[in-house]
Length: 115
Ligand SMILES: [Zn+2]
Image (cartoon, rainbow, N blue to C red; front, side, top):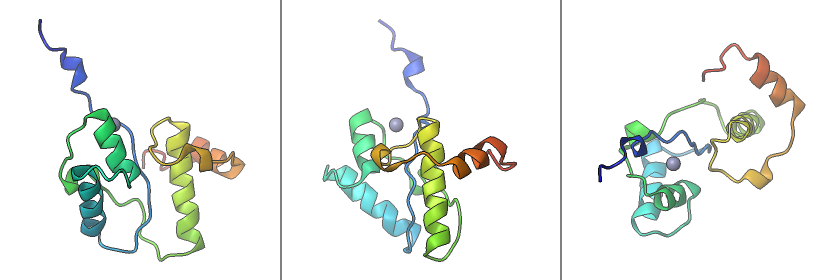
């Protein structure tokens, strides 16, 4: 029997999180969790559970915003988690996401929707 080629699909799920440290540090932590199956990071957990390959940093991580720590960054983080939750593509904690009419307005009217 032939293998189903449709199985090789790019995963659309995303983990959103702020960090005050270099990307490479976060990547190494996620990778360590994946390698030793610590089940600490939601991202590593997802990669393990779905049988994904742990791809290089430049392929799997990208910057959404550069902002100093604080209320603005917290709100941006919440917004992105909210958006991914709405699209059914987040691997953060779904239970922490609450209805937000301002985020709804942004999602439905944002000229930068693709980002
Ligand atoms: Zn996946």
